Image (cartoon, rainbow, N blue to C red):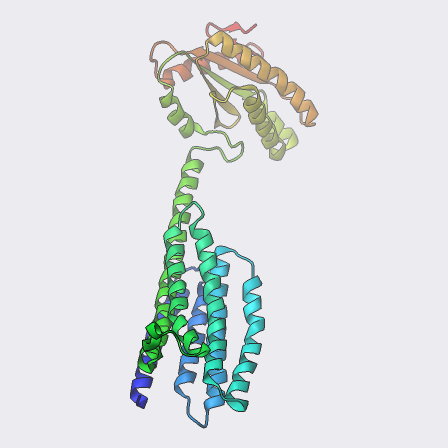
Amino acid sequence: MNSLSVTLPYLVAAVVAFVCVGFTLVISATRDNYPGWRTWTLSMVAFVAGVAAGLARSPETLLASVLVGNALLGVSGILAVRAFRRFVGAGPRVERALLLALPLVLLGLAYFTAVVPDIRVRVLLITLHTYAAALAVVVMSLRRALMPGPRRVGFVLSAVTFLTIVTLAIPRLFVAFGSPPRALAVLNLSPVLLLLYVTSFVVFVLGGTLSLFVLHDDRRREEVRALHAHLDRLSVTDPLTGLLNRRGLDARAEADGRGPLSLAVLDLDHFKRVNDDHGHTTGDRCLELLARVLQDTTRGSDVIARYGGEEFVLLLPGTRAAEAAAVLERVRSRLRTETARARLPAITLSAGIAERVDQEPLDALFARADALLLAAKQAGRDRVLAEAGVPAA
């Protein structure tokens, strides 16, 4: 084969690699990146430099070209493994093994170039190192692709990409070990081997960049979805107590449209005095304690919300007012015990309880319970009043 027919495929691979390097550099410079993307960019840079060193080969520069070019290609493979490893969060064991093996490979290349020239052994050495790097990515990708959850398409794509690289390298191994079977004799033809060799380069830079980009884009989409879900939760949750806020209460109340329903409005007595005398940090601890007592005392089907300040609302589906009053009395009693145990200022609560009439709107039900809370305050605080303003037993 003439010089042009040998050089042209390498030039094509180099051009493709330059395009991919430009793409990865632009992404690195203009967008936030997850672990692995910048390492992949370095892998592409090392790959382009390695191909360039191979193109500079001549009889006078053979040893330097073999060592420098294959060293850069070996580093490129190690960085590729590192890029995918960092993205998936795997350990560095395989990466370290490849790094330790590379000097031995280079020593072998030097020996079989300058001392005992043997191109087949050289091909074997660098192909085995490439095999190990590609298979490491295949194994990492397949493990994650078989796990439930998103990003499976990206992992399948990366596994297929690097498995293709391994497949395309098989003919070089046949040549390295000797004459292949007659059915594979066509692979001995230099143009075919050169085409497969360059194709593996193109698959590496294009397929690897595409698969890693898909993985990054999938993770970005996943995080955006998680952020939206988190913001949705924040919009209906009180940040101090973790209970529902007023908006969350309204949404849950709409779901309890039928059947008996009692609503309790309660707050801590003289809470402003607690803040003034002991500080807002102590006041927050009192609110958190009341939230825990409510959660521990009520059922899982009951709805608890911090309505604002020291005011809380409790929805008890399937519960009559008298039953709800008994629940609130247990809350009031337990609050005294837990306050003393937590060494907080002595605090009490007052509550008003109303039972829904027919399909009464939540606002009307709340207004009746709130009026009962006010009556409990006026009657001396530290008490629970149900419906007609009669103290709960």
